[in-house]
Image (cartoon, rainbow, N blue to C red; front, top):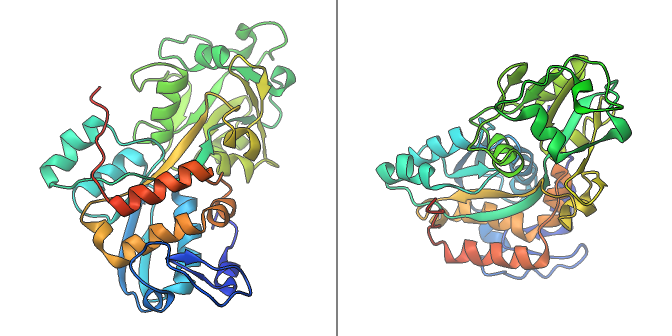
Length: 331
């Protein structure tokens, strides 16, 4: 089942992979890519994309629109998790790795260097990691603080019942459904919110690399709480409860506006695609990513994520054009 909304209508608006033309305007201009709309139509080859299940809807939405312009390019999209995606990418099995976190030193030192693969970082959207519960779990004011999330999910947590969090919390046994260690969502949550070295509690926790399985676990288990990307939570909001999060500035719900302006802190985060310095030179690969940037609002809205700000979009286009290997953090 497709998660994203259709963007096939873009093809009818005269959109090409190297530039955006307004509907009704026959003039197509290049935005610095490798060729004209006619060249895009003539592209062929294959693009294998895998990695973050969070970014997967962006890749799927873009594939639908891009293939309307370049029908001879075969694109496969998977969602095995950011970490496992980097492993496949570094073995040379993928043209593009999707990631819900930035590539790290260990990803390159342990994998890409041995495969002589140099990753190029391109931000394609913005996400708000969403905390969700079973629809009947009565969290006070449908809001949870970052300190309370730490109490629940810290590696040393012994909280077994929500009432241990304080007055107003329900007398309900805790149960958690979250991404696993192969997931960039897991990495982001544990590092940014729990402030651990990629660790969270394991007792009463079921993990999966598939966000849809996490949603199924939350919706089908009384007392369940978990976290997923905004798109997965938002498109299942009739089945579960999405909590506001108080990071110190009051209760803020994950919404397009709050994610875009970063008031939904600390759980707003960038979404990336990584071609390599070699694969980005393949016309079909560069054209695909250029398509996402040229149609960033439409693609992200179709995937239920947040488009890049003008400043971030300009940087992403520059990064794609420069095609330089990214230097990961040294720590």
